[in-house]
Length: 159
Image (cartoon, rainbow, N blue to C red):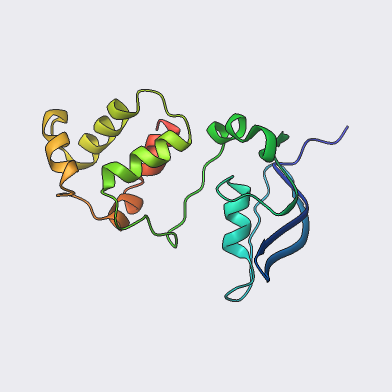
């Protein structure tokens, strides 16, 4: 019996008005394998990743991650997923705390405020009591530094 692929995509399509960003994409990624999406600007790489993460709804097609249907049961899959990229900017209008809260809520992190404070304190060497004040003003980190230090990954994975 074949093992369920980590990711399985069937006939994925995303259309924005008249523009077809992704057209009839089908692939499977076996467990333990690595997949790279290659293509020029506008080829649909970011759109595909956004659909795989459940951040963007496809126009058509099916996505399963770890055997879970992302269109019907996305929240069941999210706690078992992680995505990190040095090329994806955090929204610059949000503070580091707001970005961490956004992703933490998206992934259903329990005790989110405590988790953010704990990780931020560990990354800065500051006591948790000082973290609230400094973090709200973004005193220690810019958005790209939050990615560099792995704050989002650490909040989401618990490591």
